[in-house]
Image 1 (cartoon, helix red, strand yellow):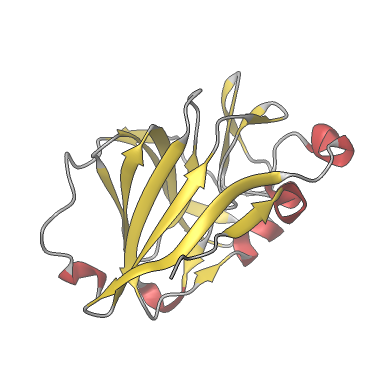
Image 2 (cartoon, rainbow, N blue to C red; image 1 turned 30 degrees about the horizontal axis):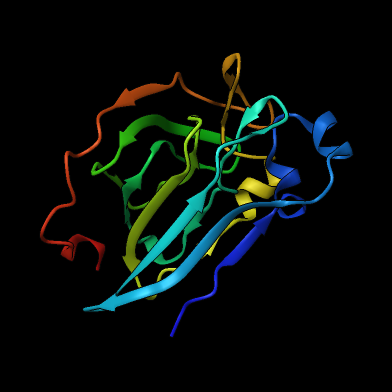
Length: 188
């Protein structure tokens, strides 16, 4: 049985984009594709997301961004292409920590409990990523919709702070894991 992708359209994402002037005039189109539940194993779910290269106005193409229900963590693996993961932690208007991980094929990027995140395809190549998460974990988009995106946007000019947050610390950069850990029990 082939899994049909859930498609994220531009109209689903306009509220989280930096370039609102562009977003108001842009026609609706398919931005990226999510294949959910490709595999299930030991209470964990394996999804695949495909993000074609492009820009959304002045900003590089990205996922809508989400938090996790139930205080679960998640781990991403780059299957093809390159990705930037923006990972943030905070309460409402105040961000306590925000960092970026640049990853290439084979690298893994854990998203710790209590953190929310966005995936960015900044390259000219197709990005194909997978993630493992707890089957009980649900994605919550409310914060990103309310705050019009994550606390930073990645644009052609570089990183730009999202003014809809009150407190945003300086961005710091972390390294990805070289590969996916064999033991994924930390996701339970």
